[in-house]
Length: 121
Image (cartoon, one colour):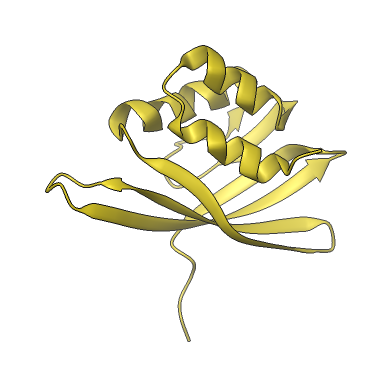
């Protein structure tokens, strides 16, 4: 089976709501729990998560999200994701986020995201 974290982030650049929902459904459990700095509360369920990811596609047309690194310790996945595309000035931009992921079987059951990759020491 393909990596569910990469599959999930592949959905972020899909403009078609149906294609996005299908991609997300292939990567997460039915009762997925998702948090990041832009969610005011935990998102629960595939539909809520697909709607949230759809806002990214709508607000950042042409941008993509790509897993650029990941590792696993004690069943917890840490993934670094590059979000990139053209900025308002027309220049290429990249922003990074870091996600901590729990799985059930081969699907994501819980995901918590952070802006950036943490303090550099």
